[in-house]
Image 1 (cartoon, rainbow, N blue to C red):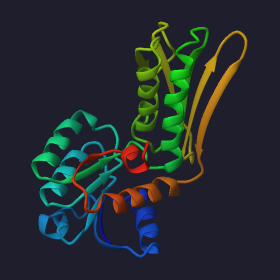
Image 2: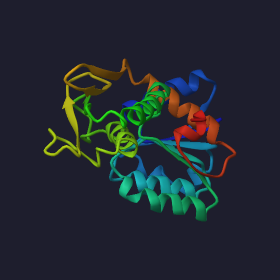
Image 3: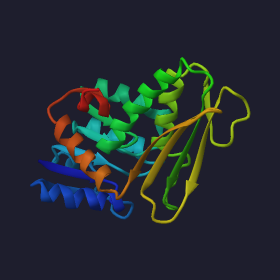
Image 4: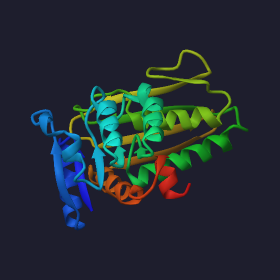
Length: 238
């Protein structure tokens, strides 16, 4: 498979290394220093594009890939005010687009567990719930896209929480999502339900960025030949 990497930072480099090990070919690598190379003609060499850039450029990058007729998977966060427009462009161009706030297989299993636990706790109002997420100091957004996805999973399934706040809760309907930034931490997400009697805690800890990169490559392999907008649960079947 021939892959275009849009956003050649730390994640892009790990994606390149793992993709080559799997027998894929990187035909285009785009960074801020070679933007003139990011053309429809150059994109057309690729079977699929993997987009890990930044919030300011993600939408334009995805749009260009879809117009070029190249399936694209994107893990860039903090641009989702444009997501519906990206879905529309995907449909108008009969394209293929997969977005995930986190491509790690383990994290996506964690997303499913989080939703199921919230459903179970809905019948037990004596428990409150809080969240904490820790990332490396170079992480641009706080809270992270993964943290927001987890918070939304709780709010969708736990009636007593109606919105998340990136601070200590001020009202019972607030879901507190505390963000911490510590050097060299790939990512840790912790959810705690607590009462006067006991506590229940679920936690996911990433040991490196390889889990994110390998999941993105799997998504790129999966989306080839498909049409429409997808998320990781479509690929994983839950």
